[in-house]
Length: 320
Image 1 (tube, rainbow, N blue to C red):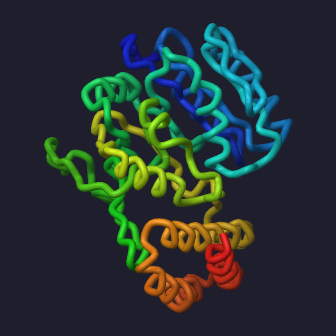
Image 2 (cartoon, rainbow, N blue to C red):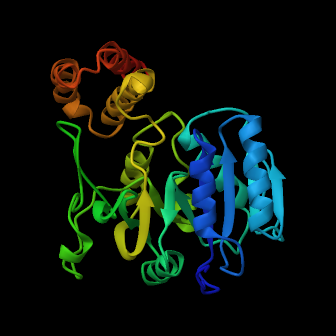
């Protein structure tokens, strides 16, 4: 059953579709239609055929679905919208199309950037709305668990980031939620990108996501900028999201070697670009890790195609 969401705050859920349409459809079904008070926006970064399939599903879930161009505003009377993105311009660009669609709607107080390979647990929408009401100047992360092991955490809200090595440590990764003390408030450097609630006042103060990050680091960059503007990061424990980690970038194996190489390229490019922007003094350390340690790691995992792709990504990050 859909959650009962209080009239204030009002959330717009933005989902960027790319890859397998069945993942996006599962995400939409977990939200459901009905009087839950949230607006739902899907940005199609995939093919027109995939967009038609998603549109058909949305028509069955929501009372009124608007079809928009990337620069169009969502009509106030619609409870859902499909933005035909015209191809894959990257995750940040897709999110920004959704943000632009609701930026002029004074009734929307928060936008929830939700991965298309994520699904809401029972009561999650209500829990997130309550957290938003309690923490009006916070970017809020969910309890993200593995879709195939829902008793194990991917991240409790967000991630610690070590800028000198570019290593990440998701909060309470691998733990059982029941083993995490209820009053635990993990220190976070950024909110886990699978589920990130942003107040519209932050969008007005900080701006939109940086589309120069085609894949990876868009949430790290945004949270860094938001914290500099006085916003805090918060974990909403009772908002539970089941996430198919890696579904959008490919998993290991012969069939996904090309996608893994593409992932390695963008991960390297975004790492270097982020470091240049926010931690320029640490760039030599990050370059050493990316030029020497990372190729050895990829070789150990027998991801041979990913090694030259990652090195190209480093060079692209220096030029970006």
